[in-house]
View 1 (cartoon, rainbow, N blue to C red):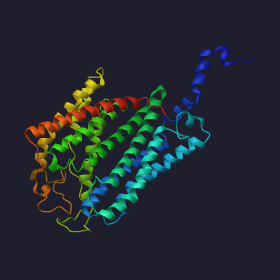
View 2: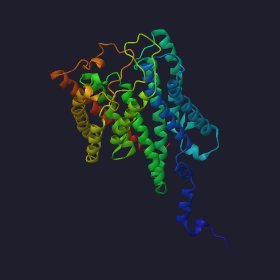
View 3: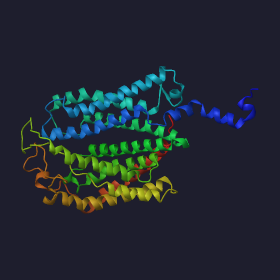
View 4: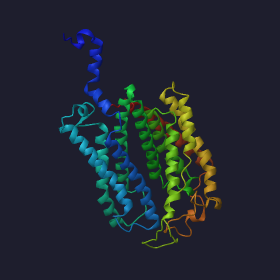
Length: 407
């Protein structure tokens, strides 16, 4: 005698139907980290390493050629992102996988997870920036500026790839979180999300390099720009990941990345190929010692753990003040140390200068550039706090929305 499952165990039938739905199948398939996420994480890592390497190349050798290894590492990110996300878009749109379609969104008739569209745009922007950058240098000189139109497009492209891959991770992470059987996969995905969050902090500070050099850490702009750029990232990553120490972890990754650069790059010989040469360079020149973001980041984590029931605007007001106050408290005195001879060693790396650094360069003279004091400094810190409040509020709101992303 055959009996239908539904006639005997209606509850079991509903569970069976739920377990075999396209969404449930997709959840199980994405319980392990999908291959395209690994490729995306590798792409963002390549761009981060390539960016640091490229700045060192400019400071040590000069922009002698477009086809440098550093440039190839950067643009590999755009190519990888465009290829894997393009494949994902076409496979979802024209393929027959119901599981993929069920966790996709529709953009101009094409279907794929939201992150794939964002990362694909970022990859295309990076690829477009390559000839633009080459033309810019040919037209306006072989400069060492980071904030230029082609570099801005490139950095926005890298940011687009990173955000897109983070959305892909979040979608898989949120689906895995809804399935009690996928706890280990959820933790793996969250680890990758925090890792990319750390690289995002690296990217934010990379873009602020010209405002946060050692000699500028007593200036107005250093703290205003960090107030604008950093709290929003910490708040977004903390809220989206749900990790109680997200800000501390990402700030620690930023510091580890930069210190590794200081320790590794000078191991490789380099000779300037452009002139004029004002400082004899014999090895690759690394970045400055990282800003001590880990201190205000730790304070933000502790604050957010104790204010879970507060409204977003209340958290934002306190966070902006805490971030700016602690940042200036630790960095102001630490900057004095960085400009002293005591910091001229392999770890702090303040004895390295680009070949173009003249004898009267502020870094070589170990003098602060446009130091702010009194009412000027007070106004700047007040504005930095306000920007930090706005950024924290925006990060909390957007991060909260990101926690709901399933596609």
